[in-house]
Length: 147
Image 1 (cartoon, rainbow, N blue to C red):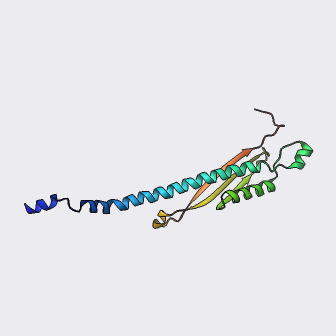
Image 2: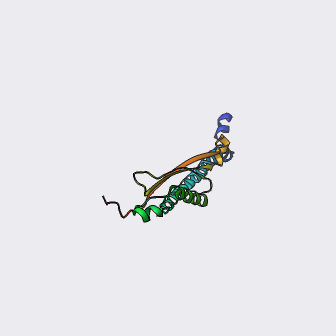
């Protein structure tokens, strides 16, 4: 009878409950912090890629425009503009590719990536997460027929 009475006592329940649930709560908070930091950097990378693709449209090859009245992008100038804008907006990002299609020389397509450092997941040997973004921009060409 005395044995059953000992199990019915609730002394120390709060401390035991706290000791069991606190690591779980901390793990959930850590994953939420790391996840939100990855999402924040993904949005930042998307915005930087969009801005860089739009900036590349301003790399118009003026010699072709004045000679043939065609909108053609200068690849080296576009690369410099994209590289500078990415360095200004997200220094940790790396330009993977910049493409100006031959069938549409007034279009720029870029692809970038960045490593996002993780904080809580370092406990599980995950130090960073790689994110990717791509963007394209089309410059208006008054000589092209509208569809």
